[in-house]
Image (cartoon, rainbow over all chains, first blue to last red):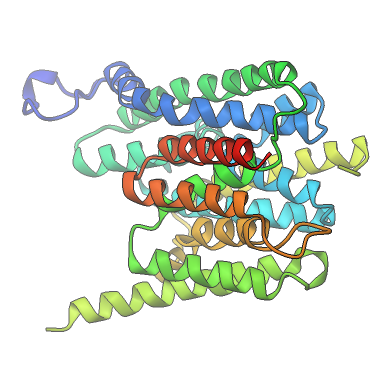
Length: 250
Length: 109
């Protein structure tokens, strides 16, 4: 896979061998175990509590492989929302993946169809964030090294996520009935919100989302949430545009 | 949950396929078309536009049969959000929320 001898690289450059990039990705992903594992367990516990079978829980976690969307779907199903709305909401949570896909395409688009399908399936916040960072700071990486790095990250994150879900399923059976699990999903989601509020645009989007969802909570079929989310996305984009224009002007 | 087994498997299948297509979309289309910046900018805000709205009614609206929001839930949610904002750490935020939830439940029982 190497196209030039490693000795030509400055010391700060990633080695170009796909194998070395793979292990570097695997190492870089290790701190994320602390985030992925508890979330996987929460999903396992909550899914079982909501009435999913073990097979359904594991099929969901392996097939969708997107924790926030999985929890959103369970929340909406527990509320008795229509299935079409459950699906639309969960896919809306995952719409950011299309953005990741567009951002990674210039780097990974040259891979074979099979590789691209595999890389696509493995795309989560962690694979995207780590890979995008490394690709941008190491312009000399070959396609093989880029794929290697991405797969290195994924081959730590995926097994941790799937096995943590399984642990959650098993632990969920051991948790006594009197422990109130009903509020576990709102806590898990609310915990994600704080770290998301990085800019004024994110704060504005979150506020519109909350106010809109509360104001429209009487709209049937949980459609109010989708309307509120649409307005919130436009608000975030508009505020970002406004901030960029402001910064651009002296 | 009142959904039939078949419907649940259907939801799992459709969400798995739909999520894969979202991920594969631009990896598959490379060279043909890039998303305009304006569209990317809107997509960037999907999680922060959906998740707070999904949670708000759970936290702020009274549950069936109640007339006021549950102070235990409000306190737990506030602790979770504040610790998340301050620490930027999802796990620390979750732990704080669960701790407040457990403490308040224990006090009010």
